[in-house]
Amino acid sequence: MSNDDIVDTLNDLIETSKDGEYGFTACAKHTSSSELRSLFLQRAAECKTAAAELQPYVVQYGGKADVGGSASGALHRGWVAVRGSLVGFSDQAMLDECERGEDAALARYRKALKQELPEPLLALVQRQELGVQRNHDQIKALRDRAKQQL
Image (tube, rainbow, N blue to C red; front, side, top):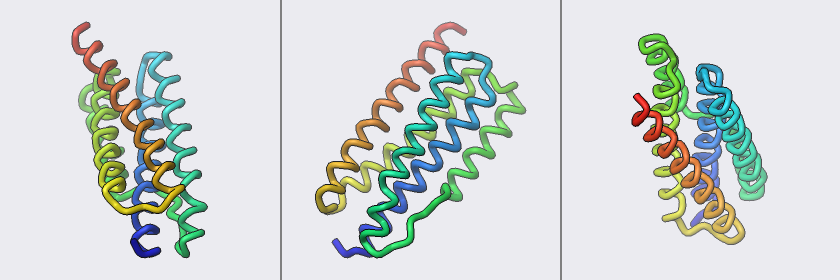
């Protein structure tokens, strides 16, 4: 795998992490549950940390680390705001949107893991992918529980 390919893969994951940070922060602002707000803010902080862990490796491999999210992430956050205004920013709607965001993040991490990343990058990306999977599963379980309570 060339250094340019490594940089592209890592920058894609940085964008993914920044999208998660911004998305969880946006959902935290619009939830009525203090428990969910706390969870979303914790997840936002974890996403911020994930991006920060990847950025030095981009420089190490000769690239310039992305510092923002992706265009699709910005569109998703815009959709959260539009949907929230239409359905009243319900906790259920915020959980739905978080799960959608985590689905996208999981797909991008799985795509990255199909690349031939050198060690210790492979171990780092594998560890972060496990965190994304944990986030996804937790958000999905909360969403499913919230649906049952309707």
